[in-house]
Length: 253
Image 1 (cartoon, helix red, strand yellow):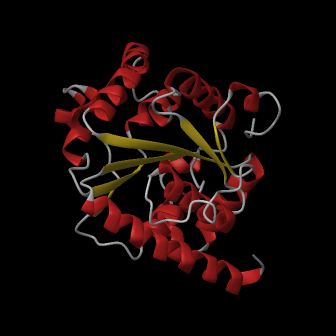
Image 2 (spheres, rainbow, N blue to C red; image 1 turned 90 degrees about the horizontal axis):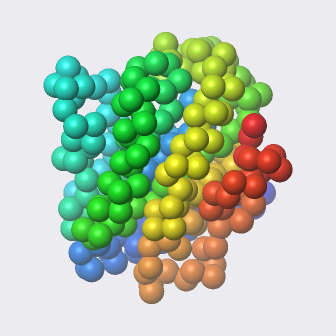
């Protein structure tokens, strides 16, 4: 792939295959849940936008929940996510998910230590229950380095079309870089499982990251109509989490 034209052509071909995948999903009553996590400005919005851009809105939903209400805070933590889970023939993409508790809530003190421990103890059993009920879960963590995050945050502040992306939590993201790294590492250690693994996406280059997430998604959902050999993602861009990645620099420290 070279230049803007190469990216647009590659994206279009992948989006055509996503439409094929959606037809397969509908025909076979599949339930697909895709979770996107990552640091602020890691590119979750842009990646999700390219995935759903040409899919049927009747069978595709993007969920980006806001701040919990008082009722949410007084309920079982996972309760507010339940109504948004996919039914048969649906694909749902969460732009941040229940892993908020392991990330921003943990770092910013929006939950207690006990609430955090309860979440960590229950998240794998919760996801296992969903998988056994017929929902396929695919978890992506978009990883960028500190300098790239700083650059993107600066761009948001000066670009009038990106002002809506700025929040008080985003503004202190770089300041709390190390705390977020510790929280991320604990999240990986406690919630990466054989049944529902984490896939890390090296996302310093937005366009390459988007293309490879789509390629991975196309191979993760078994669809005979999709040519899996042609759609294999770059293993240096999208790969299953392993603890060694935290030691050798594959994941940003």
